[in-house]
Amino acid sequence: MKKILCLIALVSVAFVNAQVYEGKGDQKFQVGVNIQDEATGIHVTYDYGLGDNISVGLASSYALGIDSRLDADFGDRFDLEARFNANLGKVVNIDDNFDVYPGLNLSLKNFGGHVGARYFFSDGFGVYTEANFPLAKYSNDKSEISYYIHNQFTINFGATFNL
Image (cartoon, rainbow, N blue to C red; front, side):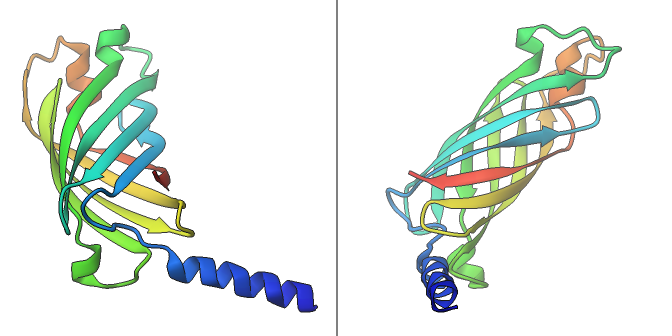
């Protein structure tokens, strides 16, 4: 019983010390699943802190499970984007382990926005979820497969890591 209580106390201390966004120099890596109407795939992000509440980074997605009516090659499945985040965890002050971050992204396929949230269980590991939406599509040509894959509302969720 003493060992179980000691283990619970150690885990609790780890939860209390976790900081989601530490400001300038902070680095986050996220990997997860991308879910949308026409496909499911992999979503990867890297964010670097520039200030107390601002970070920039890169994100990429690759569509794996595509609707059978779409014949997509690598260029249609892949997207790369630069992103800007306003990390508001310290502003909303819900929990030291929680961060919410709205932002903008400029990708190879569109210009869009995202709203995400992270929760860290320890100093190095947590979970995230993000909602992405296009604001301006580079092409409205419905004969292009990338129109259906990368120009719609998507949900991402997965694991996040402090680097």
